[in-house]
Length: 53
Image (cartoon, rainbow, N blue to C red):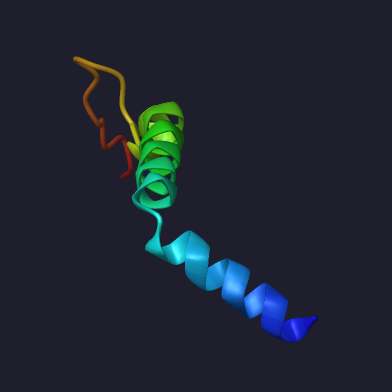
């Protein structure tokens, strides 16, 4: 059973459609989560005011 699984995994690794699918999947995840990767502490035009004595 273990040898059959190893052979199937090797066959998947040799298939170029497998790698294209992996690349498309990673690209889609990045497109969905890309806006959350930028950290915006201040809004546009907002400045920091130091009112401490």
